[in-house]
Length: 297
Image 1 (spheres, one colour):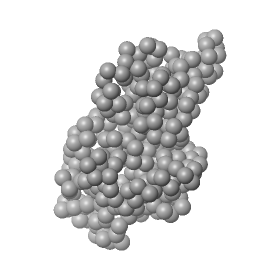
Image 2: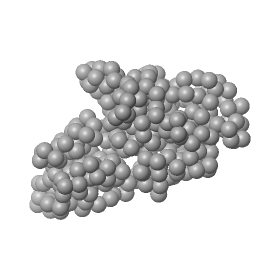
Image 3: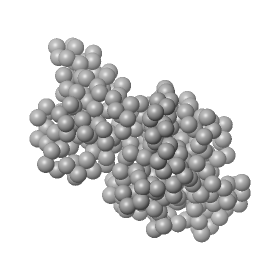
């Protein structure tokens, strides 16, 4: 699920391509659990009436199947856990969502510029990113290490097993500095530093391994698992890595009432079992659920 600030704006060409496809799309979430009728959600709507009836914009990078992606049956719509989670939040607080697709490095700049009201896009809530936005967390982070089938390089995680290997990684993701920072340990071991190839999305990283350009791709364990399921004869999962981060919803700095409303709605969505049901619906690990907390920098 993801990236790290400073997050420079993506190229104009990338943004044009992304925003031309699916802007303002609606989610395929009619079967998502609804919480709007709960007494707690009614109370939240009474406490924050300005949200009721509004349409807010969620900035997202729609290239992570299971979390947010174009509906293969209707490319004008988005589907995934994060899409349904946003719908459930809206049901609870009384708002609807439309979507602004951007490159991953542009997510927080888009929020900061006022072009989006929030970011629900499998983004890790790091202290560095929290300098640009406030986060409300809802999930633990477990990364998987994607490799060629049989793991010919014998990779065992974000450690010196990566020395001399080539990692395909997403631009701006937290995994990039983690891999780059292995250079010192590799030098001490008398081995070459790992090489990093940067790509714009998960699909390109996975393709780099399939094409033989890279040895590994490190990202959210669910994303890695789905890649293996899609290419069982070519790819494998070496291991799972626990990272000291959480996945969160980003909201603009200074909008503390909105931030606190999102947190309160997340508490209710977890309490009534909605988040667990959505994790199961999208075949994601239910053990990743984490009680909401704030990361504000």
